[in-house]
Length: 387
Image 1 (cartoon, rainbow, N blue to C red):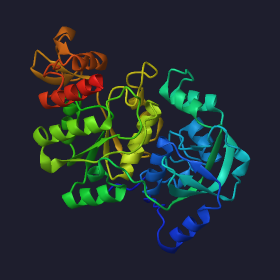
Image 2 (image 1 turned 180 degrees about the vertical axis):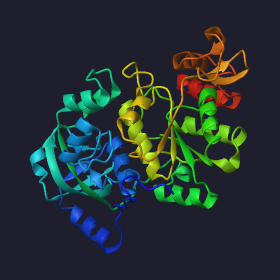
Image 3 (image 1 turned 60 degrees about the vertical axis):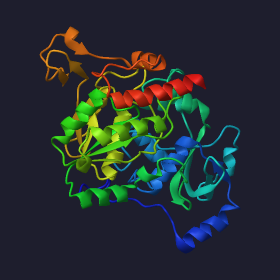
C-alpha cells in the first residue's frame, strides 16, 4: 500500500494518563476558541490525514511553504496550515515553550497546542503567494482579513475528538480507509475530490479513472465552503443516489473529507492530493480549475503545478482531465481529447445557468445531470427559496 506523506501516518490523539494530565492542566492555560477551518484542521492533524504535520506550522515551515511550496524539510507541501490569534487577543499571553488550550466552536476543549513558534503574519504576502491575489473579492482573502495578525505554531495533542452531527457513517480516518482498501484487495485507488454534486461530466471522469484502478473513493469536501455553494447534506444525498444506481457497488466507496475549502486553486490541488495519499489513495483526479473560484486561476493551472515537483516526489499519481461535455454527434460523454465534433455539437452548462433552472423548478437536460440528482437539487433549491 502507498506510504503516507513523509513515510509514516501521524497520530496526535492522546489517551490514558497523558490525556487526563493535559485535561487537568488545561484550566490554567491561555485559551483560543477555534473557528470552523481550524477545528477541522485539528481533527485532520490528529488523525494523520495531514501527515507529516504534527501540529500547526511553525514559522520556518510557513515561510518555506510560501516561498518554495515545500516544508522546511524539503517535502512537497503547498498550503499553510496555521492557527491565528483572534481579533482583540493580546498575543503576549501566548508564550513560546508553554501550552495553549484549544477549544472548538462550542467552547469544548479539543486539543493542547505545545507552542513552539509565534510570529506576526504578513497577510498580503501570504495572499499573493497562496491565492495569487490580495483582492477582497476572493473568499480566501476575506478569510485572512477575518483572523488575527499573529500565528501560533507547534505540535498538538488531541484530547477530545470533534463530535460531528452529520455524516458519521461516512467519517473514516486514514487508518480506516487503509484497512478498508486492504480488505477489498484494492492495490490502486483513485480519489475524486468535489464540493459540488456529481454531474454527468464528473461521472464520466470518475469512470474513466475506474477503468485503470481497482477502486474509486468518492471523497466530497464537507467542511466550510462559500455561502452560495450547494450545502453538504444536499450533495451527499446526490452522491448516494448516484452510487445506488450508476456505479458498481463493489468498486466504489464514499467517505467525507472534513477540511474547509481554501479556494486556492493550484496550490490547493497539491494539498488535496497529498492528503488523499495519506488516506491510502494512489491516484487523484485533477480536472478543470480544481479548487478554483472566479477567474483567479488559469483553466489547467491546477494540473500544471504538479510539474514543479520531481518525478516520484509526490508519489501519488495525478490523473489530468480536460473539460468534459455531452457530444451530440456520438451520443455520449467526451472531451476535446476524444471528440472530433464541432463546438455546436457539444453540450456545456454553466453552474450559473443550472442554478437558475433549479430555482425555477426546471429539470436540467439529461446530458448534464442524472434525473435522480436533478430531483434532489430542485427540491433543495425550492426549499431554500421558500425559506
